[in-house]
Amino acid sequence: MLSSLKLAEKILKDSEYPLSGEEIWEKAIELGLDKETNLNGKTPANTILAQIYTNMKKPDTIFGKVEGEGKFYLKDGFDSSRLDIKRPEKVSSNCKNYNERDLHPLLSYFAFHDNHFNCITKTIYHEGSEKKEKGLNKWIHPDLVGAYLPFNNLKNETIDLSKLFYDSLYRLFSFEMKKKITIGNLRESYFQAVSNSSWANEGYLVSPYYQFDETLQEEMIKLNDAFGIGFIKLDVNDIKKSSVLFPATFHENLDWKTINTLAKVNPDFDKFLRNLISDIRGSKVHTSDYDKILTEDQIYAHITQKNIK
Image (cartoon, rainbow, N blue to C red; front, side, top):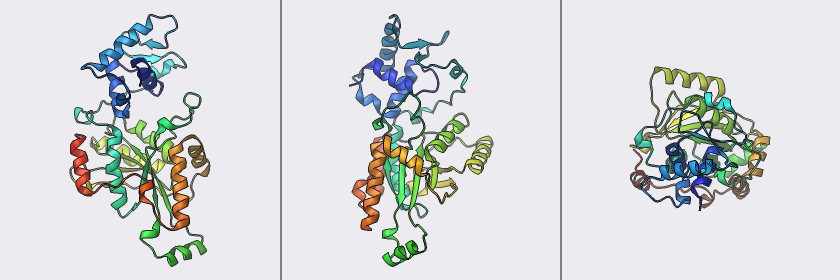
């Protein structure tokens, strides 16, 4: 069970900028860490704030505070230049009621049924990664990975013939999930996707909400042209209308060094690779080894239960 201070430390360790008590708690909810605490009162953010202030009275406190603001950071390794980082726009209230990972079943459904992907997916839990020096593992974990295995679509003879022509029919995908994309957080979100997803055949930034205007669309086009990460929009009102806004650039060659690094530091990714090897050797996809594909009715029940609007 995480204490208030341990929760604050965990959130601030991965934050690009100082955060208030409320922002720490909002981030905890987004990551699902709120369930690992005993903060059950009506004002958990105030409890976190009180605990930080109490700890700061100690000479060996790990917390620092921005002068003139109720925002905090970790003293260890803090770079004052981070104070100048432009803060992303706060998400609207309709995004605060659910966790980012609550969107994963929607993407899994879309990626499984969409003709371009036809892939099974696997959530990668970065919390389970091997602990490294601060910042070393930052922005290497995709939120979900996916694989197209052709056994249900092609005859075995076709697959065997492709091997003789040294033409791989298998495809690996990488997905970075965000609850909302605005002009304020677009570039940070996109370059996180570039860092996390460029090892795959195709990488995507995924969100149900894009705050569309001319500036955002122009920037999306520029980023897509320059770096090749695509955009997917999930439609929470009609999941079948989810779509690829901008396709990813297809990379024929995978980045094996990055794949190897991910497999070494993260057990979920390592298991994903082992399952793929087993399925390819057996020419059969064992769907139980990957994220569950909900039915359409289950998807809408999930959307309602999680209050995804």
